[in-house]
Length: 271
Image (cartoon, rainbow, N blue to C red; front, side, top):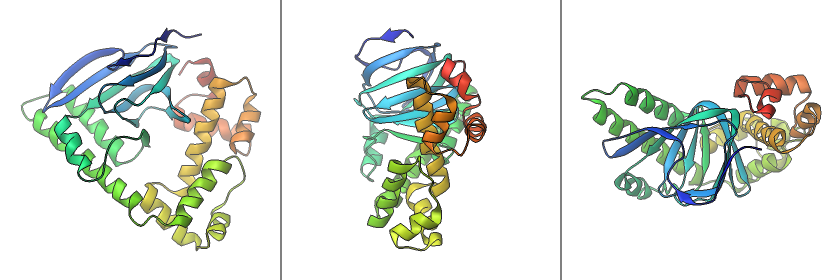
């Protein structure tokens, strides 16, 4: 069993560096191997970019598996748990000013729902902010402030895209994937069930959710498989098939590409 920290309302754990630039608190947390953070809350909203390692965050019934390059939106006072692999994890934490939070709230972004963003505009901007913070100069505060407002603009555009005129059939398609990701799903069948053309489904899904149907399905399968690796003793082949992968080899190859280690290493906590 990993070490555990009792439930509490707290600042971020394992902070080894912290600085404030342009009213933005930037910190790096080094989270030790096998650390388990029991149910806790953070005092202020933040964005957490995984730099190294991988961790699993659980918000109620929602679990995020966060590989390097993934960014998690962490709302203030949102109860959640964290679990680190044996190799630990390094996370770059961005805590915006209250003025910025109020600015984006006026445009419909409340930072009140946890969200995992990977390989998109927001995570790329966060990575750029991390690099800027590592070698600060006289222009860095302005650069940090500009990057944060670019992040805000990207979140606003994502919110507008998702919420504006969201077709009921599209929500049903997403729910179908969420509920049956372990089954054999194909674009043509999803489009036929929704009563739209495959091309229209593909285009609309990307416009509203910022990812393709295939990428979204793959992410859901990988999240389910990663959770099973940590929470059960099921064999790799059973986990692969239950999550919707065609074979153990297919699952292992996809897992290595995304997580940078094998499923066996992830289960043992060495990545």
